[in-house]
Length: 212
Image 1 (cartoon, helix red, strand yellow):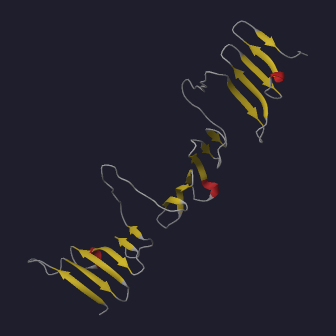
Image 2: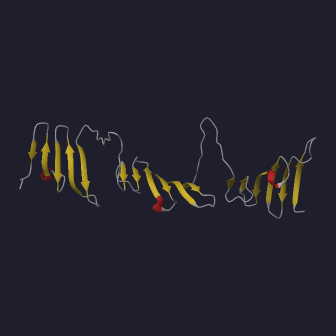
Image 3: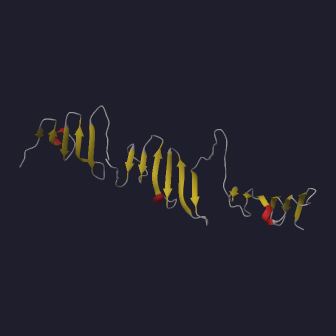
């Protein structure tokens, strides 16, 4: 035959397991509980690929089932000078989503793993991009934002001036609402002092421009 086998037995059976090398398949197989195909637990192919519960491993380690890593501080480490990827696939191997790390970016993908499927980007500087590959602020959203609650709030906390700025697609400031605590000021056409049109405080409304 093309297979050499090391058989294990006990008083109840002479075939409770074996280790075999199949020359034709160029694979070493490990069996537990018997010696039939259904009792194969592990195989190592000549190309170094290891299959656990699978007879045709497609990667360096191919597991048919779940994996449990248990320790006081369990780690799952991925080392590479290039991009590190955790890819989620359907049963046929089609990529459905992924987490990728490259340099100082951690990127999240849904619906595929192409650039157009990126939905979230985290930078080492703490910036978060939602639908944006290169976030320009602490939170940069490429799209609309919906805040829903019984009493939804949009809070801005600072010891200095708080500003809500309206910009064009290139980042040019077109209008703003500013507050330094005592006043609520409205700007149109820019955000410099000359663009202020209304200032509101607790007692009055001051029109900075001529009313026509």
